[in-house]
Length: 123
Image (cartoon, rainbow, N blue to C red; front, side):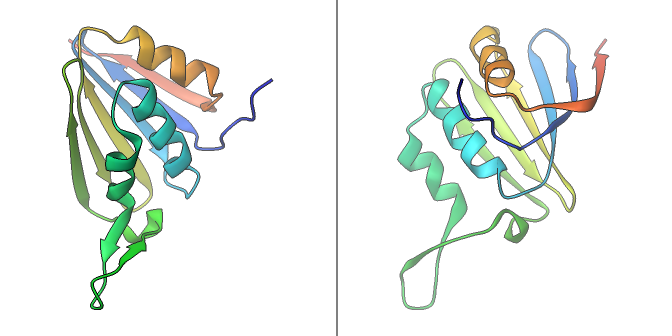
């Protein structure tokens, strides 16, 4: 059985094209997110740059999830348009696609469903 990642999904919402997922903000989100994006056809190395910054010596340094606050990151490929908002206590990922099956399979198989998940179908 694959090792479960502890980033926990706490809320979902969708309207058939726009799918919203909220996660508890913690460091384990990085590993989940990199694998998730790779499963959806994004380049893992390019996505990994989300979690880096260039310091004053012009060297890349790895950011912690807690370093990302009140910012939005955008990703797009031929099947998915993804926005990720990093708030103070949670992360909100918006996935725009008509091909949601692969994303749902990843969410279920990687075991990130929280114990108190809330779902709401959009209008």
